[in-house]
Length: 267
Image (cartoon, rainbow, N blue to C red; front, side, top):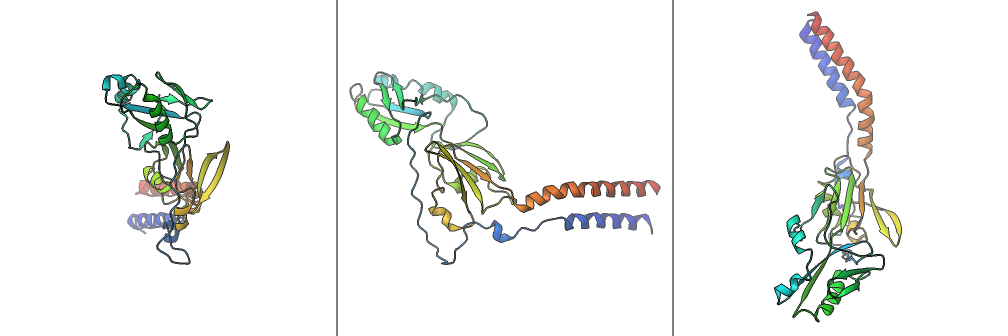
């Protein structure tokens, strides 16, 4: 047997090992939003989530009126926000936890604003809080308008996704599919039928499962994510098998390469 044949056999043996240890994933396991037994193409949507102000939130309160000079007094954080390059309405990826200029909601559920003093906003929607603050500003400004936003509406997406990270949601509303899109989607190894949503509710941390392969997701209470939700994509059997087989195949690969090197050195 000449050297060329021996090398060809060694390569074929090596490739055969790799193929034999590879895993197959069914396309049905990867397909999302599959039809149920009814076969309907229309489904009721979940009620959109509207966040309320909670203790520990950081709020942006932007005031405008017919008098820009007087209005500036009620916007002490405007210059800092402009310098930080914050863009409203655009979801961003957060690599660190920088200082966020805004009004911290204290343990008593209140924030303190220039001139009008402390305002209880915990439990209110942003629209309700803005209306309350506007009513107080009528004593100081002509035709004031108020915009209130939650600056620390954040979600985490971890596990088998392309770009796991913490995301800041500046428009204060995001769905589970949109969050996975921000994270670069689920990898081929991630389980789509057993997505974990970790949520803080009424002082408790709840652990909930969602099946992305079913259309029932769209009417699930976890379709819309809440602030501080954690989305975890569990690795499937293929990922676990791949990890185990790496340790099994590695010695064989090294042995094969050593065998080829020995044969090559003799000719």
